[in-house]
Amino acid sequence: MPESQPTQLTAARAAALIRAKKLSPVEYTQAVLDQASRRQDLNAFATLLPEEALAAARVAEQAVMDGRPLGPLHGVPVSVKDQVDMAGVVTGHGSAVYADNTAAADDILVRRLRDSGAIIFGKTRLPEFGHKGLTDSPVYGLTPNPWDKTRTAGGSSGGAAVAVAAGIGAIALGTDGAGSVRIPAACCGLVGLKPTLGALPWQQGSDTFGNYTYAGPMTRSVTDAAVMFTALAGPCPADPWSLSATPPRLNPALTGNDLSGLRIGYIERATNPRLAADMAEATRASLAVLEGLGAEVTPVADPIDWIEFPARILYQGNYAVSMARHLPQWQNQMDPALLAFVERGNGFDLHEFRQGQYARTRLFRSIQALFGRFDLLVTPTLSRTALPADFDAANDQVEVEGELCGITRQGWSSYVYPFNLTGHPALTVPNGFGADGLPTAVQLVGPWGGDLDLLRLAGLLEAAAPWADYWPPEA
Image (cartoon, rainbow, N blue to C red):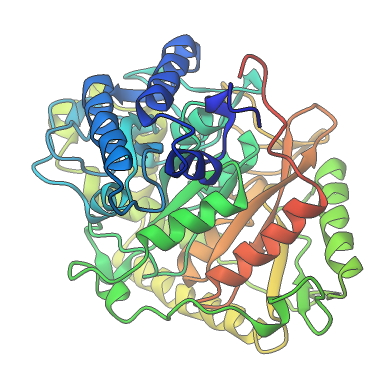
């Protein structure tokens, strides 16, 4: 990418140019802030921090000139989802409830970004409390897909995906509670990683032992995702899963370009009754690349219970409990879809909730059994391209090629939420464009600790079919 277009550089390339004194962190940060100003139509940001970012950029530039040691993301602007604490900045969670919720301290992941040299320039939009796979809110309106504003950006890390896709920062930190990194990454043509449970600490969880929420990188290139993952990984005293996390390791079959001996299981359907033809074709093309490199691809014929309804009980039941304290004062200003989730969650009893937890264990063991036969799993990321921007997550059914296929977790995002529950790493990679011109994507799933396997395999797909030079209109 020409150096005259800094907003279209990958983070790794920008960091290399900064280290070589060929790119000014101040000028780079200003270019990103200018792009944010130009693209306010995308409504990607809850907060922009121009003064703080430029001050940090000046410090970063001086460090380069002084010849001091530089981190892997030195001078690179990054955005953070407005669900992660930054000292002195509001963490709004996309809700009027927390409009004045100024964080007292940085989350550990924010500290690690700063330690890596990154410059945090803003916080990105999410639906209220991250409750759905679309990004809109009664508080701030719609964050549309930059490829087509009549479509959703996905969610709940929709603002992060839109920012990176539109060149407003090369990388972003998202969070993923039921696909919330991978759904918007797939909708907007990005790489999105939900790591192994505990690989990246999540210190803000209210139920850390029952956790299914993860933080993860959202980037335009696989290299950027790998750099970001490495910078963020490691234990945190507040997250017990991170204290005993499986150390990342690379499958020897993935150390070169010859994938002979690599066993891949292909899952064509989860709970979704239909897969769009363009999504199926794009997935087969990705599998063909891997087969061409020597991998053995086998359809998974096992009858897997994807526990959609038990998982829904856990998800909506948790929202019913966590939102209860806000309802008396804030109900009239909250998202109707969230309120519907709360109402449904209140309809479940303790017996059903515990059965849902038991079902989570069964799902984990089913997926673990697959990794006795396969090194990696591959699925489409979504059943179709981005949904309409005005899709009602509480009441509308997903339509795939004229067929109504149920609510989003049944008919659209059924491939992603199961791996929040099982803890296995899952990564979405762009793999083309659908019949409507919107991005398509494939999901790679690995064994616990297999994050590097996913990044390596994604890198091979990226090399075979590069996508970083494709940009949405006006980017």
